[in-house]
Length: 235
Image (cartoon, rainbow, N blue to C red):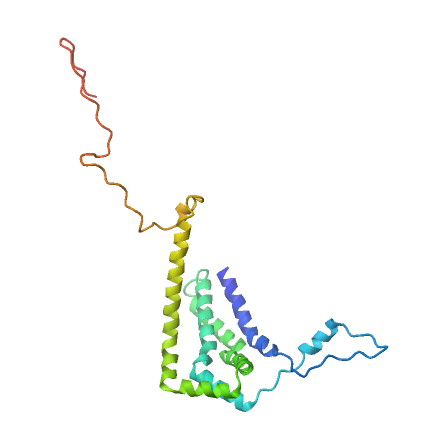
């Protein structure tokens, strides 16, 4: 199942840049065609292919260059390489469960070569550029670039991955603790949770036995032997 998911992710990554570039919203001055009297109106279904086939808006070269420079400063231009590396690890982990270990290196070499050709990492950056162009003006990009070129901006780029990772770890730990606490409060209604949840470290320890109480059943009192009656041998 995990291998199948990895292959689906590979296919999606290969199609991602194309989908992102083809999803540019139509220009604001686009007007619907007017219906001429005596002419059958065109259905909305027939008009859809024409709109989908419309070419993407041409990006100003100066703005594109500014965006690419900003992506390099913020290291977002490495996103494609990071995604490819993470996907390759997922594929290796999934396939490694089925292939013999001596076959895995050759398999991964072939996969990486073909995957790089099918979905170059640079295509991810190509897909990100028009997204930035839609959300930021050239003046915005220039202002962001000025900040990220400063020492503080470079420190932010360097430290932010660790900040995000540590923040996520803290958040996940808090949520896990809260979820387990809530589930423990539901054990009375759902006894099956007793088998699923880890031991409660805050639960009181079992009561210690009383002094001299070994936990064994008390021995019966010795029988009294009547005079003239042979004693019963111990079993």
